Amino acid sequence: MYWGKAFPKLQFFSYRTTPSTTVPALNPTRSNGRSSSGKALRYVATNVQLTSIVELRTGLHSRRTQMNIAFLCICLALVAVNSDALHAWLQMSISGEQSVDFWIIPLISAFLCYERRNAIFARMQFNPVGFVPLVLGIGICTAGHTAYFAHVGSNMIIVILFGTILSIAGAFLMCYGMAACHEARFPLGILLLAIPLPQAAWDQLIHWLQNGSATVVDLLFLLFKVPFLRDGLTFHLSGLSIEIAPECSGIRSSFALMVFALLLAHFALRSFVLRLVLVSAVIPLVIVKNGMRIVTIALLSIRVDPAFINGSLHRHGGFVFFTLVLAAEGTLCWLLRRSELQWRLGAGEVTQ
Image (cartoon, rainbow, N blue to C red; front, side, top):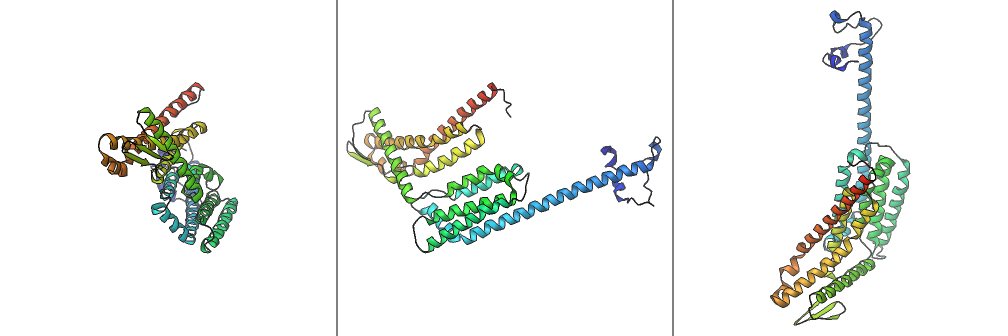
């Protein structure tokens, strides 16, 4: 079928092939011996073909809409049932002891799914296996709610959040299939970062960051030949004593840098080892950043103006050092990507 001739003359779609119907040729003067019945058969075949394609696309679109509505309804039901725990989680993220921006993780996950929507939803297929994690997650949420309302344990919000995320993953697998779930493994997996740590683990992590920052401060004071006396997390200088408090541990910047490093590794690197190197570099960079910030404020307070110890650089100047760490993480990512590309070229792989 020559489409350039068929499509300018769309009037042939109005004909119906019945035994008593004669379909005229498009251009009888240039038929060159070809019968009009042969052309009519080709037109009918093309019409049936196009109709089948339209019906197939309409069916796929309708099926996709149904799956989207089903998944959305399950998510809304989970949010409605777990609204009390989610509200407590949101308050914890904003003003609690673990005042880390956990709330931004679901937004990042939704954006990543939207950004890869063509690959994720290219092959949708209902998968009943998704019922297993869905029901298991609902059971975990039920157990967490029972303990939460009975005031048994302080970590039941963590249990409820884990059950909610497991239920969402199960609903996604059930509605969209294994292929879509495999394509969306990173957006779904990053939801686990929205779960706060148990308070004991949180306190231990802060204490570890404090000790690491104190070690860096110790080394920097020795490097700059600043006389000091150390007593645990407290440094006694000439006319000044500083203590590395939990608020100075850099836990919030550590979380932000961890999310940033995960996104960089996901988009820029392919090797699992190089991704692991990039993400693992976050903790030493944060510790060094904290030590540099403490030493900078201490030296400015001793040698320039004692008001620096309570000034805006101490209270609101963290973004300056955070920017330096972001630049260091970005530079490391660029070096790792460059080495990965060189290795792939050496191995004969084709880069895009």
